[in-house]
Length: 224
Image (cartoon, rainbow, N blue to C red; front, side, top):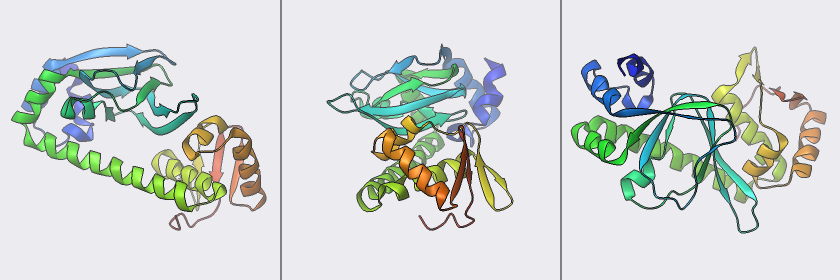
């Protein structure tokens, strides 16, 4: 497992640890692989492990009683998920699905809890990450409550652009951006509405779209 120390070092959760501490962590990790489309765990299941993404991408989502999906987040390389159930011992709070062929480092609950007891800095890092996720959830709730659909969609694209887009002069380009179904599931609307709103944003010169490449054309991305 020593070969995974460099992978662990890049994960914010473990970024403050010394090499000898990273080596200890690498010994308690297991490798898990999931193919595109596989469900890693579902809401309501008993949580027994934390997952760190080595390669790939996962989707965190909820489903209502009618089966409509609401996407909460996408987590990629060096991110982690599954920590809540290990801490509060309650069932999983959402579904997590691999949307690419993905590889993970997995830490079982008893090893994870012992790790927290022995490394307070990891506990602090988890608290910071949970705080960021809570703030992001608050922002999403405010967006759903106060922004119209077009503004919600634009805000969502801006968030993705700032996270994984490429700046070209004053533009932000998102390669392999979200599908219209993914946008609809994240913004609380239908795919047909997304199609209309994207067309409207293009007509206003705010974005350009070609297949799944999005270009955010306006230089001011701080107004949301």
